[in-house]
Length: 157
Length: 117
Image 1 (cartoon, each protein chain N blue to C red):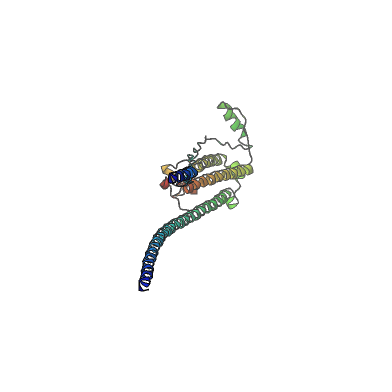
Image 2: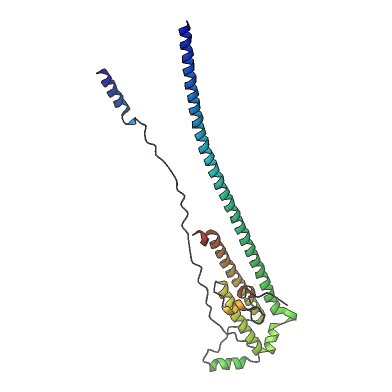
């Protein structure tokens, strides 16, 4: 009787030790999986942060580009208004002026044509000359397109 | 003998499937699109032209000078109002050219940044 109890106790003890051993093994395996998961999550978070940072940079670049183009389009409007003003300033009639001061107007028209042609060249991507870049006075600028031809010129009255 | 026979039957039935079939691995590699990399359009180089203003008073003189210079005494004229229209039209063409060129530059800057090459 006592021998049987001893045997059962031994079996229970062995089963317990084996169970505990297996449980520890399972815990170790779970721990390893969790570690890998943790690493993957950390990598994913880093990548997500990178993506977010890139998106932020892209958004800033888009905003900046839009702003630049809006400024450019506003400059266009002003340039056209300035052109109209030159023809109609103080009730100026260029036709009548051309009759009374033919030679002078011819000179002005030719100079204006030359300047306008230079503006088209610059708009198509031509490089600025040193003189154009250095121009800061009204007498030095290309009055047909100062914002394009003379980037260092600040408008003054 | 029986054991050998049983083992032989098992090997015969399972054949190459021992150890399982190898799985085909499918993976994708992200390959960035090739850059278009066009160079910017060549800038225009315009030829110079000369405007002649002709009025009822100087017409004779102008034509005489043209003949003297060996140029056909003919002029293609526009009125002062049309001259203003022409000036405006050219200004608009120039602005459109500038706008398109700027757009192209901005696109290049955004999609083909030099520091990422």
